[in-house]
Length: 78
Image (cartoon, rainbow, N blue to C red; front, side, top):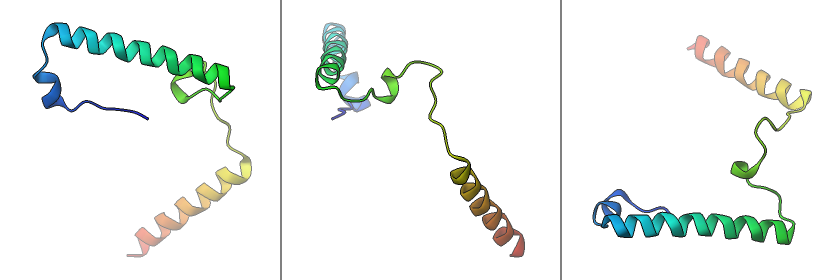
């Protein structure tokens, strides 16, 4: 679960509270990583090694291209 602090909440915090919030966020991230490793869960997008990209099959690319050509044709027809 991702918790996002709204900007107005951040504006009302002191410098000490902001530092503590940053420390807690780092600690939570480390704990989530350890839990994922322990449970054997796949790495999230941010934890994946750089340069490792998901591959799309040729059939999927062809399907997307055909759909895009259909959208262009529909737009030109108007």
